[in-house]
Image (cartoon, rainbow, N blue to C red; front, side):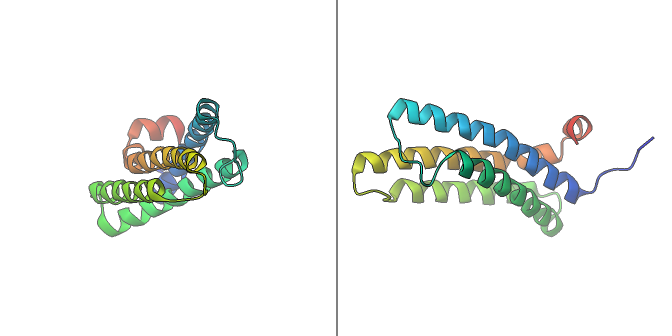
Length: 142
């Protein structure tokens, strides 16, 4: 029988990948609902392909970043959570003040779409330590 415990690097990386897959579905659903409700059409920057690849890759990298936080700070997950909540708040504020289009209606649509995606990703990234430390998550999914 296999009784070896997975390394913390493996757990952090695979948890990031798992959260990335879940977030991809959430972001794609948000994208569809947001575009149907607001009528925002441009898709040069945020489209199905970019969401699938970027969200998965980003959360995989965030899982690896969490591993380095563990190596640097031990079990002080509050530092990681605080850093990612602050980073999420900063990115959201930057998006809400940005100007992508000269037309204000298009600009507001872009800000709403990208702002929502940033909130989804930021909150998921901040919650990563809870899943990495969860014995039930490790037993059932890893």
